[in-house]
Length: 351
Image 1 (tube, helix red, strand yellow):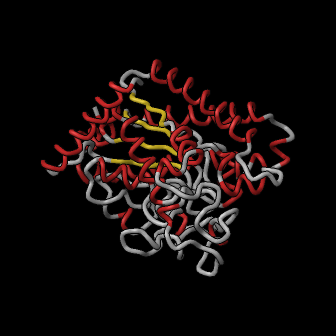
Image 2 (cartoon, rainbow, N blue to C red; image 1 turned 90 degrees about the vertical axis):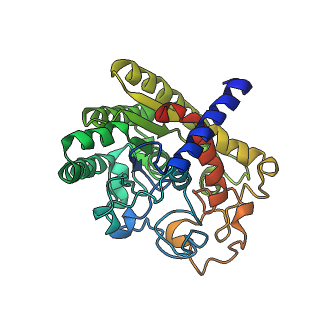
């Protein structure tokens, strides 16, 4: 996208957001979220799993200054996106009490450590994407019962559906699992994930979804924990992991274009978070950060979930200076920048 057209897109989106705020209505009727820890807002709190974030210092900079299950010190990128779209509350975790009451504006089905590969979710006893889709069908039935079929269909087709998945499949499964990495090359494993992705999109389309956004893989080789685990002692991004992410992202884009051409009326946007996050990592100072190798929590080189806790020695006092909050997840400050980038890229979903 050229500079002038990019500026025009930003201007149009901002204008729509401002008008939405003036009239008091969000830009879309609902926001529905699927995926992993990048977008989980607390579903794992209700599961018997070690992959949780419902304890301090997680959430210390959130609106309530309390942990919610979000894998960050504060808001996620999707929280900022929710605000930009004009909603006054965030889509609740489906398994929470609020997720059973406040459902018309959308819900969040995401589960940390889930992915496109079903066995990734099984390893960590979290909610697989097929199960998230089953919950989505249940949610649809409840919406129909509340507002009737016609209005419900408008919510399903007009609502934005966001998907974040794939990172856990590689980092928390493929790279550490000889049952996978000795059988499949990274390219072959990517093909397996892409087939699952295709199935998810086709299922959502069959259920009435028409506006879908999916995030690319981030530069997985630059995550602080990935450098520690797979960097061979070198204090720099792991090239082979980033190369695998780029290969996957290319296939994700190609497959998405094919799906758009196949299914009439489908608006499908691939959000490139690889480029924007890599820019923060490579040029932290220009993006308002002072630290991109270490995360804020603990030593900043490995801690996540239960390893990132109140007793973690070395946790920073000002997370706004850090690109990463823990070994795998961005800080609230980085999430805000990612969300601004998503807003620009997602113009098709709100037009």
